[in-house]
Amino acid sequence: MKLIDGKALAAKMQAELKVRVEKLKTFGIVPGLIVILVGENPASQIYVRNKERQATAIGMKSSVLRLPEEIEEVELLNLIETLNNDDTWHGILVQLPLPAHISEEKVLLAITPEKDVDGFHPMNMGRLWSGNPLMIPSTPAGIMEMLREYHVELSGKRAVVVGRSNIVGKPMAQLLMMADATVTIAHSRTKNLSELTRQADILVVAIGQDRFIGRNDVKEGAVVIDVGMNRDENGKLHGDVDFEQVKDIASLITPVPGGVGPMTITMLMEQTLRAAERKLK
Ligand SMILES: Nc1nc(=O)c2c([nH]1)NC[C@@H]1CN(c3ccc(C(=O)N[C@@H](CCC(=O)O)C(=O)O)cc3)C=[N+]21
Image (cartoon, rainbow, N blue to C red):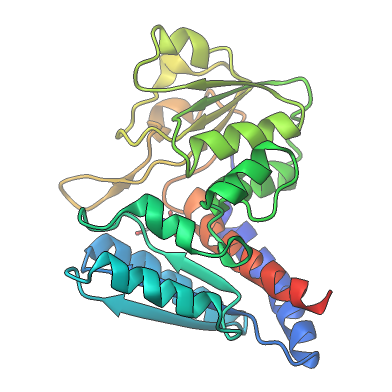
């Protein structure tokens, strides 16, 4: 078993991003990412702080708007409209999940696709599936970077994605398909899931269930990517893959923490930078 070190790759990419930021600054553009956080979800607070720290580290401008849980939907939509027209910000990210009284669909539609660094706007989802992406969701984008860095061959390989979310599963499947893998999307209702996952040369797991994939679900030599982040009663993080059971079967495996998570944040920065670089053209 060899570890895919997401933290190390994220650090390496940050150094490259820093150079690109400095270059852009010589043209008078400071790339900016604004994050909107509604309510007090403590887990969200940690991600938001990490995002701010990374942005600052590479020389980008970054800000977090903390809004009260009770904010009205129309107020949030108006704020997004203001930010759409504000040249300071090249990326706008609304942290999910939102409180139940606010329509996620309306909010995601309100962000102009050019600033939608999450790639969640229907226009960006459609462009990805049409093979002409503008913004790519950062978790699957980070996974593709990891597979590239570790020279994982994808063409003609059998990839199984467990999880069908708009944020991870669906865009992941499309990116693997664009890289010429043969892709199957499985999910919580899939029958004989194990039979399917055991055929995977590349197995991506994003189902949101603690240590869901065990030793009998993985083919010898498979590349295993774990998107899960589940906290147990002692506050320890576990993936959707039982790392201890799978580590000696897989040829390459991502740890949790230190795998997909750090790359997700770095790719968010990369998308913001790319949005800012488009201003030059
Ligand atoms: N609009 C939107 N975009 C998002 O990208 C988004 C979101 N909403 N809502 C919440 C999820 C979650 N998410 C994480 C990103 C990085 C880590 C991360 O860096 N994790 C580290 C540290 C984990 C720890 O120790 O707490 C690791 O895995 O090593 C975690 C979680 C982005 N999300």
